[in-house]
Image (cartoon, rainbow, N blue to C red; front, side, top):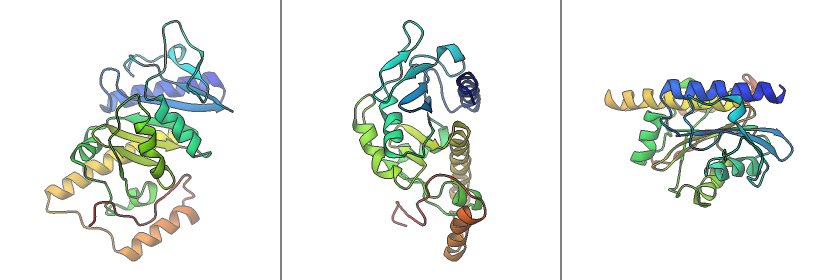
Length: 228
């Protein structure tokens, strides 16, 4: 894809995020790596429903603006995005949003570490909660860094969710999977409790992730964060 196509794809994803109700007002942000030390990012202060290709900002790995319309600047959350790229050479895109159900888990301080749904076991595995960090500080990137070694999906305590992928569509799909899984797990709790898949079948599914489905990115294997 050329740069213009990537810009249009970012806008498409932003519009879908808004339509899904994952962001309100100027919430959330998206970035894509387009070259060595070169990134496109959504600007601060603009609803994702109003994003157009010309409004996107081009930055380097230090967050310095290389090309932008007058008055446009990246979100203070860009430090979190750049940390993902620094920690993982395989990451080509980062999505941050506030999907309501998954963010509910983050606000309740309940990790999404159930292994109850086949698709989510394969696609994302367990989802930890990174410790609270004040926006615009280094606390957020420092908080997510340890989890990036094993996870493509991370909840942010009292904040929202973060997904990474080899490309933007992969990162977006992971956010979709996260939110649908959160809704299903919440319903299961209301119906009497989540029942995990048998451990031998969990291990088999995780193995098939690589051998059969060839899913890119990281997976934690079987890991529980809630002590269950």
